[in-house]
Amino acid sequence: MWAILEQLRDHATTIVGLVTALTLMYSWFRKPMKQLIAREQQQEEDLAILTWAFLQNAHDNYTRQGWCTAAEKEQVLNMHKSYAAKGRNHLSASYEQDILALPETPPEGRRSK
Image 1 (tube, rainbow, N blue to C red):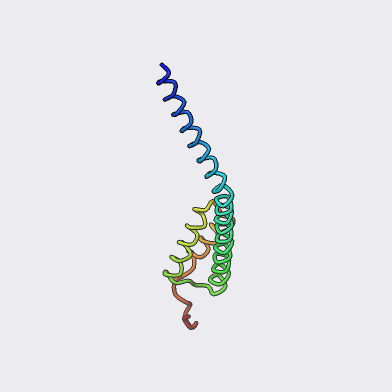
Image 2: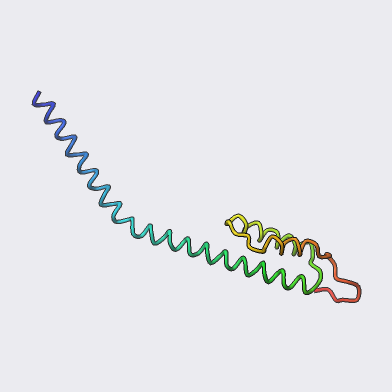
C-alpha cells in the first residue's frame, strides 16, 4: 500500500514539475510571440495600403490614357484578387471594371507605350 502511495507521490511530483516547466516556457515565449503577431499584422496592413495605392494609381493612369494592354489588365486583376482576399474592396471592384472596359490597343494616331 505504501509503495503505491509513494509511486503516486512521485508521479504527482513529476507532473507538477512538468507543469511548472511548461508555464515558465510559456511565459518566456508569450511576449515575443505577441510582438511577432503584432508585427505580422502591421505588415499585412501596410501591404494592403500599398496594394490599394497600386490599384488606385493603375486606375487613374489607364483611364486617363484611355487604353490598357491585356497583360496590364491581368496584372491589375491579380492585384485586385489579392486585395479582395485580404477582406478589402473599397472602390477597387469598380476600378477593375473600368480598366477591363478599356480597349487593349491605343487609338489610331497615338504612340504606344
